[in-house]
Length: 79
View: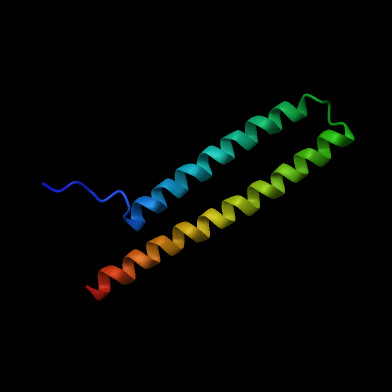
């Protein structure tokens, strides 16, 4: 019985998905703490900046995970 290769692109996609989930949960936690500032202007600006950063990060991780899956599919088709 062979153990799965930890450097396999599909494993990289799973890790990227987990990272995106952890980042999302951390952003939501920070957002809830910012809402305790009673929606001051600074809290709103910081919340918006964190939301934009989260959307950019999650989009980038999705592209990376999709590329890893596509690479694994083309590599398995060529063998």
